[in-house]
Figure 1 (cartoon, each protein chain N blue to C red):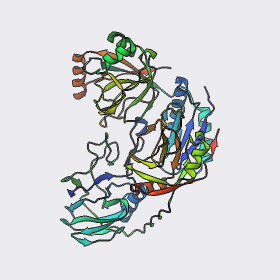
Figure 2 (figure 1 turned 180 degrees about the vertical axis):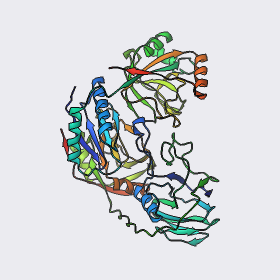
Figure 3 (figure 1 turned 135 degrees about the horizontal axis):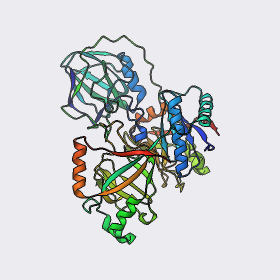
Figure 4 (figure 1 turned 90 degrees about the vertical axis):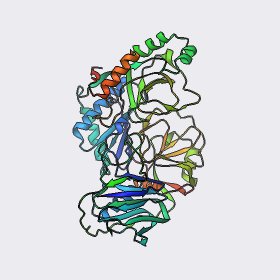
Length: 285
Length: 240
């Protein structure tokens, strides 16, 4: 019982919700870039929310199913074809053994999640199936791989899943621990500028443009996580993503809301946005 | 010892607790004691320490932040010393020039003989102030001033796993092959990070590290011992 990868696509990886509890050893949490989309795809099949899916980026793979099963997709909107027949997006679909799934044109977003009944059964490493450089022996799917599935598959109950919120041009952010160390002009730039995703964007981080004013804030190595926005001395802003490192040496000027991290996960190079500041969390002595 | 702490909600699921921004062993011990108390009393949480702060994360959103901070403050005030135990770990390093490819330049720049370089690098006990950058990468404090040296101007594309290097006022070990700009002075046969080990990294923030010199034969021997899983890590309790 497996899925045979005929063509791997541009960047296809197995992802669940990541590794919890290993960041004290410097292990990034990893997991699906768009966590809500992964949960949605799993919900459509009645899977556990954190079951492993395929995360497919920009250009889809060609997959052949070696068993009867159900699949569902969520996240980026692709044209989908099962044995060259179009199939619906964000719905459970029955797949017969030997059928081939292909991905057509990308219509919206960049990362789609393919859930399979019971979740993909590749081995867990440090309690998670998420592929991650330096932790798992390979970090993306290659042509010819076979992805194991559960032996039995039940017809899924129909679950209503919420439609994802449409991106309205804003990423919600909390002021980060070092926000107050910024100059008034830098703060204003964060509030007012329209930013653009640079070509440097991947599962580890998204660099955005334009730069803020440079700074000379001396920062001890400190704890960071997905959604932390760091400011380099040259003024470049970096949004850390799921595979980003666990500590960083730059001031943490913003922290994205969880929902906004998922929004970034669907942004391609040159996508534009502004930050919307959320009420500052309380600081207490 | 009790410090004035700042509690700061970091995002929907986490709280950042900050001590005075200092590189200080007493602070690191205090953070670790608090971490221990949190592990014992706050279920389903996990925490990371880096220098003078502790990040406390939960798997789900924090419902009542004020209530949580109240609980944490109480926990901090009543935490018992002595629950936290740190370790002293002795790490073998082979300072053969085959591994220490930047030794010659370093010795020239610092006006030291190779013997003096090794002596200065192995005499101090280092403190692990953070683990990050790469899985298992230790940020060590305590390098002798006479060994401070800027990093390479042109970083290497590939630094071999286990390489021991110096950069600025820091020393450390590359836990895996990686690009890097540290000046390389030796190599350790130990696995600083290995997913098959439990936990995957034998060092925790707050532990003490000592390096001791081994020759190439001993390096090979220890490598074989590690491969055959008979190597005994030199790890003993450390009392601050």
